[in-house]
Length: 495
Image 1 (cartoon, helix red, strand yellow):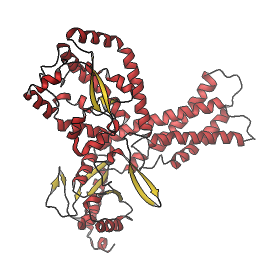
Image 2 (cartoon, helix red, strand yellow):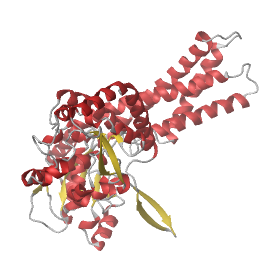
Image 3 (tube, one colour):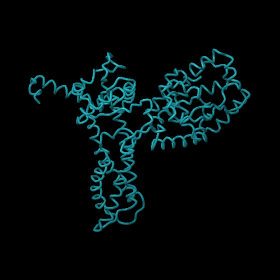
């Protein structure tokens, strides 16, 4: 307060203008949450009206119905349900616009609201009319559908605005070691998360002025100035970059800051992308890593997409399978299906099926040609491979040789979308990222398929696989499946 009194009116005016300009550039996330109660109220009202129309006007119903009764029930239901939504944290900015928790909350809140309406009808003995059970069920189904769909579309709008720099939280990362850089890279690669990284603090006082285009603002003693100057809202502390006493002191000084949220990275950047669980054992909070990256509702939806999609494709493409099998057999002697030993979920080895595209003695031919073997070991691919048959070239160009892997999907060994399948010998190329790769099933297609296929370097393929694992959503799978069709039709990067 004393410092504010000593400032001249000009300085105070400039400071106010700077804060206003900063607010316009980065509107608070609360503004993004504000329309949600109004959208929900509209969806609930629409569901109540739609249920009334369906039950009493569209479907046959012979008993007299009081419009006033359902009108007053609607006036009571909308505010009550909004309160229930709030209790389920559906207007909490900390839990919105990411993951499936929001949609789960919508289903649970609508269910509780339905139970409340049933109890109201049971306890209102003075009412002249009973609430229709069919109307209640229609209200629940329509409310889940309309609220969920509206929130999904609104989330897409917020993601688009965040990519333009709006509705983001300004983040400062404390720590410039490998883990700190990895956290920054991940946040910058996912702009829809709404985390705008403004730079680093280096506890060790490095001479670096910037890292990957992000400024290094100084040491820990400059934190207070930076928080005020940039309006920092999130402080991500990298424990492996600080000594224990520094970490405790930092948390002690800033934990009670009202407008600053402090987060700790896991300290295991190469491992934590699988997700973690925190459980108290003997009153000691312990962190355990998930064995698989995709869990819960995400795993259920991915499994449904895999099994339903693979089954439908096998039925629809069965005539094409027969034609390809005949072409392979006529073109060159040998089996129709080639079995490739690859690494799957949790390191399990299995046979991935492909239509054979090479001569039968392809491995022996490779051993007898050192220059081809060298290219294979360096890139995992061979351009103009002489071992590939005539039909095999066409199958590879169109990626039809991969179709038998639909059987692997039905056997639960692969997924329609995922990282590239690799042999046990290739696993060493992933270095410290091996653990991440083994937490998901390999895919029939994936980011590598739509981003250049065989034209990519091995390092780029590893980077794309890690990006997919860290940023998985069911919507990413659907988008990649659609992009795969376009890429396959173009025939680029396949040989």
